[in-house]
Image (cartoon, rainbow, N blue to C red; front, side, top):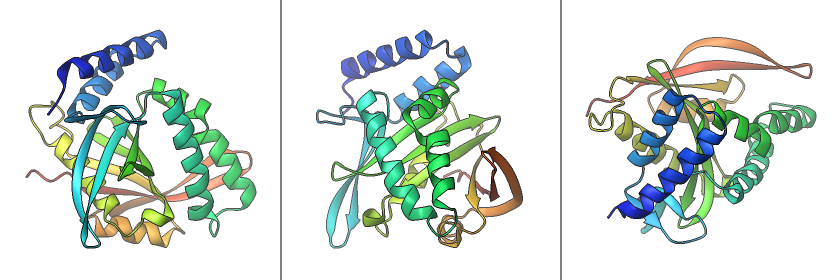
Length: 234
């Protein structure tokens, strides 16, 4: 059950942090409302904060799966380390070592993530039985929600965590009481050479919209597909 006093204190702290960073009012409202929408259970452990818990069948047993907003320095450090682990594994056959290191510093260092969060990006830790299994990042753009990041550590793959994460995002954005029901579609970008990820997303009902090439600086270019799926109405 939601412990409202703790949640209010959490949201007050978040508002203070975001206002101190001169966050736009619309982004502040979006961030707080989205976090409240995730806050049906509070956990008093290392990952304390507002989050949502699921009990998921996995390999003949019941697994606890938590979606936890990233708001503390410790959590950012955890995500930064997870990104290093996952990106080297995901992209070793796609990018050079030099490009992976460049992208990690540019997009997934603590300073980079803090800057993104000032502009409305919201990071979440994905926990499997209270172990960090991966992370995701959402960003609202017009009438789309962009899944900017979704990474699962190798040892936690094939447990249905990606599907559970997408289903949870669906439930948030189709709930009229939360106020985001005008968001009808979800988008993401994926490397065109990343056949494994493309296959996963296609199984999650994403389809390719168009190819895009993006100069990310440092002499590097990302060659991606924009993929899209409709958010189910029920």
